[in-house]
Length: 365
Image 1 (tube, one colour):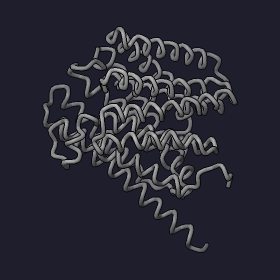
Image 2: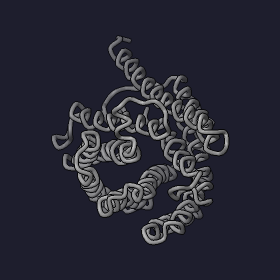
Image 3: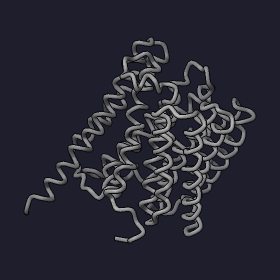
Image 4: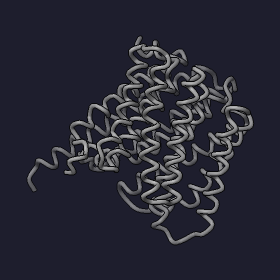
């Protein structure tokens, strides 16, 4: 092993910090909707978004990038993000979490810039722009004390990061000259939208929604998942996760075009969770059996049971959105509670699979 690389056993505390933020963020989200939740979740209901995005996803995405770079210093980014989540949980001064998240995202930008300089390509540029969006959201929060100002830049961080990683895999498809041209246009629109947000939130949010809707169409058209969904086993499972996620990205983009990205809009909960839950967590469920073994050096053998948490997530999200569009608060609360159960089922599935992998490794052929 490279002596400049953090051993897997030392990555576990970073991952646990992220998981702690995820757990508290889920309960905080339930408390915001009036669903019964443990007291520690109720106390952090106002920080639901920060815990889920900046703390959890910030930690795990920057950890994944650090592992890929085989250097020690990039691990400071997930450490700072994890500590930012811990600062929220321990009730420190309001400025400490955004300061730590700003430090984490600043380090993540430097790491992403290094990747782009080594390999100048459209997908590494997209990853760099995603990192910059995370930094922008954190700085907006730190500068104004308004966590809500960070939500759409944070959303762009996740969407662009996923899009960049998927774009990389299109290299294995036959050349399609129009695809990269369209993708560049989408990036320009997304960056312009993010630049507009602080001054003209309504115009910026609608333009960003248009970029996300177009990106969903691009991914459905050009992603390799359209071909791999015809295969079997884990490859097909990943493709199903991706295609379902792209559909939710389109739903969120459509709602955002109608103004649902704006605070106070009746469809805001539906628009945000269509993307954060439907799109982003579909990607998490699909890629976890691949990324988690690479980060923690464990085996996760595929099993058709993987489809259960995926199906549960999408069905319960549909219930939640139905509640937001007229079925009533009860549907919304039920959907949110079952969303949490779906995520718990996903984590349990991963843990059982890790156990199966360990047993298979110890069992002689």
